[in-house]
Picture 1: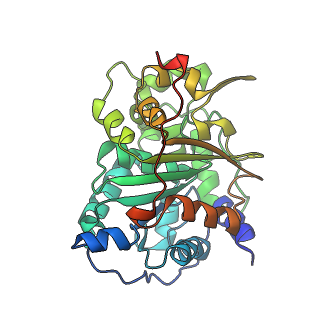
Picture 2: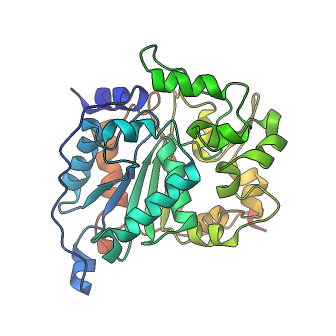
Length: 329
């Protein structure tokens, strides 16, 4: 099956098929030569309805290793059982899930010795990896690439296949109950739900997104410092995305009805709530589009991305400062 078809199935309905858990054998980083020549490890966080052990995701890891041979690929998981890991994409406390990812990565015998890691987030896994960068970042992320992620939240919930009872049950609870403490602490999509018509409720009750976007009165300076330390943040939006509403959330754009406010015109950027403006000034913020609907990825796009942003430190693309704009005043 072509990768694009595998990924479409994988990210819309998930997969419960277990795959072999083997990763490339790699020794701990111990010298300058290791740092110069060995590809940085790649950490991948999958999306809603998916499992870390799904065959399509493993194929993505194999592509990354083919482009940069010797890459250690680590798939973030909430449970070693693939079925339970998939359920955790619907049911769970995202704050606790990010904390678990932080602890697991910091305790990994190889990841913990790396001078840095690269990170790849698919759909909701993208904003969860951003949460990793902002909240712990140990080991630090060099480049973070996200595909179709909901960085500015969603204003509508996804439809579920009739046969997917976990998805349907979770979505049924969300409708009309998104701001209750029960839902905000247990149902994953509710924790990045952000409807402009319910903004005050969002600020008061959001368990995850309002915090990592620093939208409340108190601004966590650690978040902005950590995100600004990235070399590159690469934000892919799918041109014909019908799963994520609004699709422009992948670029941090604010969408209210038919009005779209780009990130660089928002207070979040001008006041640099999470470090995006500082990152942009040094040329490390990239807005890109991918053809097709949500998660319709091709081998070519993935290979080009892996070649450009992942690999050894000495071959990594260096960010270049962008021209000074009047909006930077």
